Length: 144
Image 1 (cartoon, rainbow, N blue to C red):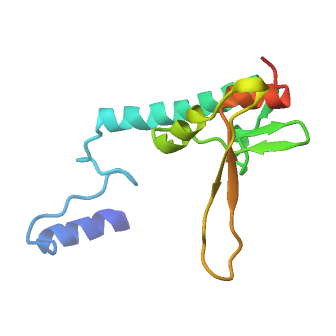
Image 2: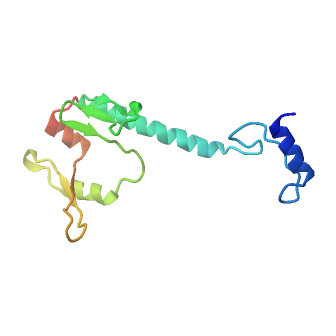
Image 3: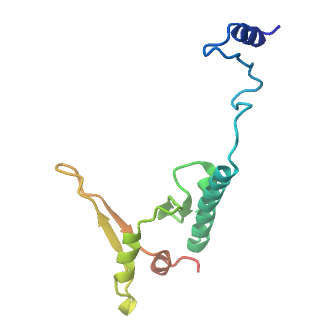
């Protein structure tokens, strides 16, 4: 008799801690009574796929190299100038898009949004630059 089966028999004969018989573990990690939700599993796979598809599209558009599959902090490397971390999902702030589309496109100007934060006294202000990808491709001469 193995140690695990002896412990299971002992626990079952004692009625377990809750007074119910304890069944021995068959495998490790997953309970035999665990029910897998196929919808949740599919959501996880489609989210992962969306992220990988976004990385591929960015690499193709800018003529870069997709590096996300190697597990580093970057997803795409574009020449010697850009290292890209891509996020794909429904969390894109709509207010940023609204501000970009309001800016005029006359005279070959490229709408650019700069978002600044105010972290408080003694801390430097952080700023990010946001452009639509199509405009950014024009600016940096990416593959079209």
